Each structure stands twice: as structure tokens, then as C-alpha cells.
Length: 165
Image 1 (cartoon, one colour):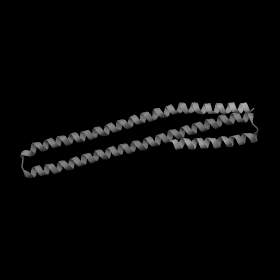
Image 2: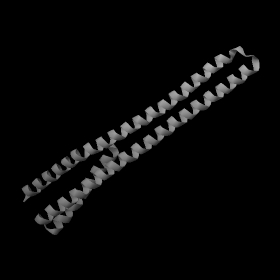
Image 3: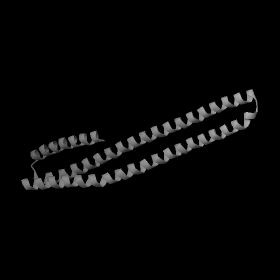
């Protein structure tokens, strides 16, 4: 009878390993896709910044064309150019910050959701499998004691899993 329990635990741990391997790949693929999306968002933000800088360069070119005019026109144009540059750069920086913050929040939330779902699925399958096997072979008192011990082990496993995340 003790060999049956040992084989039961071997099967249980094998199931855990298989589930971990199978679900880990999905999580890695999901996070990889999300990382690519974040990369595209960053490229988009950089393009917006380049466009803003291009506009700034065009404006500076216009300023050099007006250099032949006197005093007031030159001073006014320079002041407007500086304000326009600051506004564009400030808007570009705000957009970049907003994109980064949103991407980090989304990535963190998705990672947590995947880990929680992996934990829930693994625990449910382990509990169902263990219950069925143990009910067939143990007395009720031994069964309750083993279930209690298994739940304690799963809680410590979950605690370790969430602390690694």
C-alpha cells in the first residue's frame, strides 16, 4: 500500500511538471507578444518625437530666412519658436511617459493574471486527482489527514510561486 501512495505522489508531481511546462510556454508567448506591442508603441512615440523635431527644424529654417528683416520681427519670431519648441517637446515627453506607464501597468496586470490562472488550474487539477486516488485507497481518517497535509504543501508552493513573480 505504501508503494501505491509513492506512485501516486510521483504521478502527482509529474502532472505538476507537465502543467508547468505546458502553461509556461503560453505565458512566455503572451508576454513576448505584449513586449512586441510595447516596442511598437515606443517606436510610434519616437516617430512622433522625430516629427516634432522635424517641425522644429523647419521652423528654424524659416527663422534664418527672416534674418534680413529688422529687430521686432526677429525678436518676435524667436520667442514664438522657443515656445513652440518647448510645447512640442513637452507634449512628446508627456506622450512617451503616458505610453510607458500604460504599458507597464498592462504588462504587470497581465503577468499577475497569467500566474494566478496557472496557480488556480494547477491546484484544482491536483486536488481532483489526489482526491480520487486517495479515496480509493485510504480510510476516511487517513484521507482527511492526507488532504490537510496536501493543502498545506500547496499553500507553501503558491506562496513561493507568487513571491518569485
